[in-house]
Image (tube, rainbow, N blue to C red; front, side, top):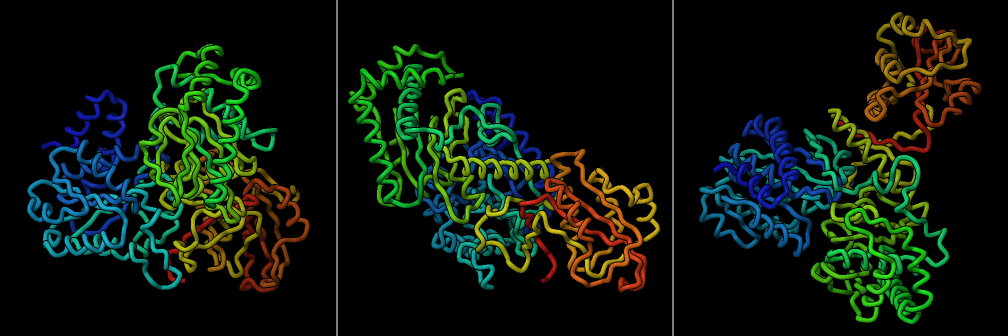
Length: 616
């Protein structure tokens, strides 16, 4: 049986030709480059990177089918520790994939009975009890002693990594995942996520840093980070809460209007999401505020509400349906309100809300952590986001922003958000784009950077001994450097006079100069070059500042290399890489040589994260 061909035909028969083409490309790219070359005697790890809510499941299924075609007999598909999500994934596997023996968590007998006659897919949630159970089942049957295992870990950055790395212990989920992959004769472990920050900050020695990364592009209709958080300017779909007199009324009226447009145009559902805080008391207050505004709408249905609808009507620009008249929309809004055709739903540990509750009609959904990974809201058009944290984490914030997806009308999207939170999201999007650019250019040492105050991920999964932070705006120079050839550096710098305060040069020249430096261990030359590669991946003609000074009678080990004037000069270029090259006389240390000593300063107000592989 040709598993990939069968799956692609199913997708095409449903009318999703473009999706089938995208899945085929991903499956063949990953298959031909990484699965075909698999040794069937090693344990390897890779990363499938996609945008949040951009259709990773279909791509994962395509890769499973390709791997089955190439001889993998057993697949373990991991979901987050959520009963509903595991069941949804299991149901979807059964619906979409043919020719496999498909096992849920309680199907050990089916697994044994099949005896690998058909390739097996086991769908498990990342739960200690389940992982321990199946580690034992896989081991006890003996099938894996002579067969490779293919593990697909959806949301691999969420629960799989070792949260006890800084206590020299191994967290339970991480331990059992290790056991599952290492007890087989060989394994290919595919991490899947839209937020890879924590994964890229693992060491290779940990066994959780990917050997390869593949990024798949989202489809044309996808609304993602660049739609909501472009590199310059604020899009029309974003309103800052600080600039609204009555933000809650604005949000409620807007969503009623959008819902009327969608429902009158044959649409099934229109959702509005409120994401204020993790605290249940805050959810309760927001629920009351929504209800209060809905009551106001009902009380003023033929007077002030009409004025509000008229004012917001001008800002309504549906692109997937013909814009209805204001009169028709007003009638529909009145019907939604008076016939109780709306729901206010609170999603948290105190309330049980099923996905079927917000699959149709006009809904106002309030929640906290439950709005995170795996939870999708169809027809999500209106978002009220005020959640803040004293120590915000980029990956968590991005996963909680459920605004991304395919089934949104871009002309009616609206995000209500604090201005400072919008800036944080824009910064996260910029780094996401940088990560994708590095992956697409084949850069293996992917670098991650964020503004001060924004952490890439939770600290308990980062090894303190191996993850180093380089501060932008700080001057770094080696305490005890050497040059591979003083003459070669002198020749490179010959055209740059010290009488000129500075030169603007290509970052590629900066890298060429640094290539001749033999650093002491305190100067992370490889990390600095990786940061420059990161900048070049986004801006191939990237520019830096070069300052050249000769015959400097600087004493070694005095704590500062630069003169006050040069230090001040470099500081004026806050948004650029600044390389200052001093040729010291060598009369005060420096092993008596007329060395070239580099001083580098990266763009300011930014923290660059570097993974050190060698033993600390």
